[in-house]
Picture 1 (tube, protein in one colour):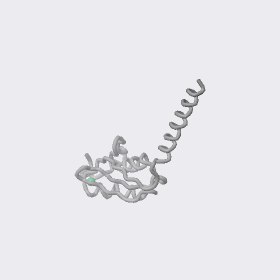
Picture 2 (tube, helix red, strand yellow):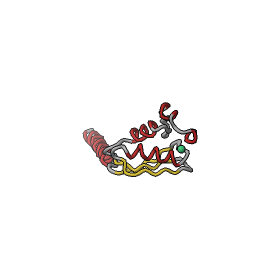
Picture 3 (cartoon, protein in one colour):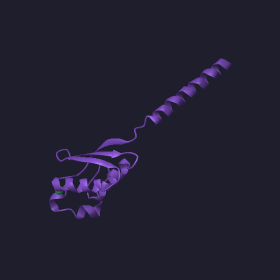
Picture 4 (cartoon, protein in one colour):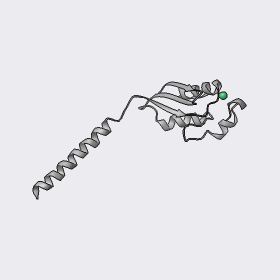
Length: 114
Ligand SMILES: [Cu+2]
């Protein structure tokens, strides 16, 4: 009976170790995030890039106008993915599931609207 208890405890300890190792393995530092946007043209690209570059922790922004995907390299210690999407939304563009800020979208030139 003691032996079984011991084995169970060992199993728990092992699982905890694995869980802790996974937590530590969480990537920190520079990461790249692909965000689907509603950018239409080079003006949109410029607008989104400028808005993102004004944020702390943004390292680089590349937007593919064909796929409308923005590849954002950022320092995860300084900015979170949610904040990046919010910044794009506040510039007037959709960012993944986050919808464009209505007021900002209204101000976009006609060619930049969906
Ligand atoms: Cu545009």
